[in-house]
Length: 457
Image (spheres, rainbow, N blue to C red):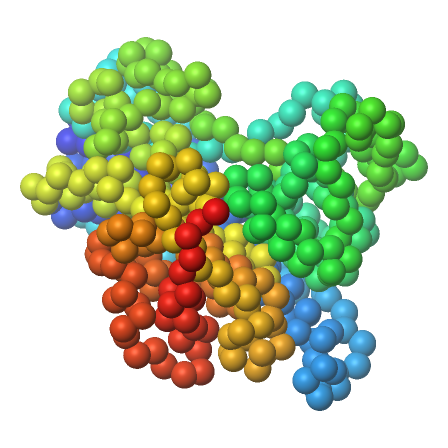
């Protein structure tokens, strides 16, 4: 049995960084990854999709150039070039990560599927490994529903879509949340017909209704067909196309497309890890249960990233690494509960969300103030001709601390960070209103946004 100081299962956004920190502290580390280093973000998540979003935006800007006085002529998209550019960027990211790990003394990378055989024992490729500390960073994967006929058609997930070589003529997407909407707008801008089928009554149901409505209007204005309250899915093939049959309010309906993307959620990669052999507890949804410091119920075993159910984003996974490393190596005492919820939706214009939503604020029992400002008030947005969306902030009326913010509009994914910093510093919103902001920017309207706070109804 090979002995190490630490074993890390998974090379996502926590594993490699922790491996290097531990090795730099003098530990012998085994980092096990069954696929490509970098996990979902690098291989089929953030980096490839945002690279494609950039291509889609370039096509959109070219098509709408005439309103700025620029004549381009007919605009077409060479999907092969889009894919090649994306693959080159992904390959460069993976190579950089692998080279970094290979150059780090004390880190041994192993390609294979790891499985617990005991609380501190792991088997991979027939070899037994042992370590007093084991870190699970095995990530998640797309949920595949059990609809009649689905297994008989070549459906896509966000993972298999990365291998798609041709541009869909008509992309049917089931799901109305973050992954689904980014792909919907992206492929519509590439030139595909796009239909979105959502089982709920609105898009991105975890967001406030006004946000869902605004995003709905943005996507519909670009020619995306949106249907809600969809139930009773069944799938089949018709003359080489894929037909999705369903019902809405009891009425039998169907839509036929060249490609089907199933974007109905994600699940943790716990199967096959042998968690039961180690006695590691999971919750009813299948996520590894962890405490505030990301420890499992087994001493010396930790779970980081998507598999622990404490966040489903690259930045939450990386922050998991920071928490574990700070507590184990820096004598710190960091906790998951200390971080402020934050995420972006990368449609165009983007949505930036931090802290409480308005719905959550209404049930918090606090006295809350709300400020709202349409993007039509923002000079930078008017100059760019991109005035869709709005800004919304929530403030505790007594402490003046910022509770949350929702920014939907041009550069919102960056602007929201400045509000996040004030929240993290536990400073009142007046820090923003009393600060001189640079003109012309989107951020310069934040003092106006916070300067017109009204009691939340």
